[in-house]
Length: 273
Length: 165
Image (cartoon, rainbow over all chains, first blue to last red; front, top):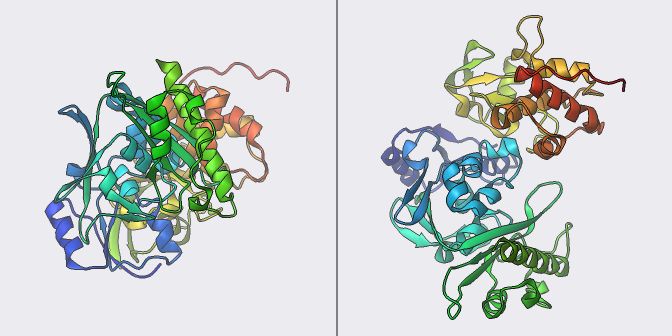
């Protein structure tokens, strides 16, 4: 690791001031991605601002028809929260699929969305559930927040404080994890609104597969609006050339995985009705 | 450098550490508690699992400074004197180890399972929960048995006698 200054403020204003004080300062959430990155010397922040003592960034609450989850809420807490289980069971299930138990004891929602790893799970949930990313200075719809591979709309010094997931409808997440890393090779979150038969609402968000990071799969959404069944997706695949191709799989392989995960998710939702 | 105060295995520890020091480096290199192992150093294998405030974490992926003010328990801190922790005793009873390298992390992972899920763990649950712990001897069968038995013992449940195996 390169040297850095470390602070662990107990006050949000103090944390923001330190982050604003240097262009190279970085917030430290659960550290399950950042610390491995530092160990490989792939990042050299001047300051690490440890957010773990900021009570304002923790907790899960129901407010105005939405589930509001603090940025420093850990995966294990989302996975086991009775509130999440009751209102967004698919989100609890997704959180329980991230990494492994020890990683889930540390990793956080805010860290995951701010990092926007193309294979992370939470970004798919945020897009499919039309979540709002709340920062210290504004609120951004997930569709405007995730801007590309490891890229978000966050400005220098801007901190994710919470994510607001609107309730209503039903969703499910199907993930094909890389057997070694447990990151998604393809993860598909399908959400269906409770709109009437004439104006059905469907969102399909895909992670793990695309070179551009998490994305809404518009063709699948259109097909599912016409007919909500796995067979409606027959023959549909995202463009193989747009998919990640690496030692774990070709673009065509990932495109096929996306199609299969999407069908499984739709089948799961259709069966649950 | 930074002054650090925390509790390790019940004893107060004060150390001056570089901010870059990993928790596992503090434990092994500075405090010479070498029961915690480094298998991969990339968050995959779980050999460095320790408990922070009762929760299993990978000590290769936590900075020592992040543990300021916490209570850390390593495998050395589990036994009460000569009496093994029930999870340790179960690993001995069920021969839940071959070379033993992964064992400290496995035991810590097993204790964390009981904390989160209670003493009655079925085989499928234990196998799924061991996703972050690798045994390169591939001795998983006995590790799973040991964790199930250790969990029951931790819960005060008398384990059924092991049939002739």
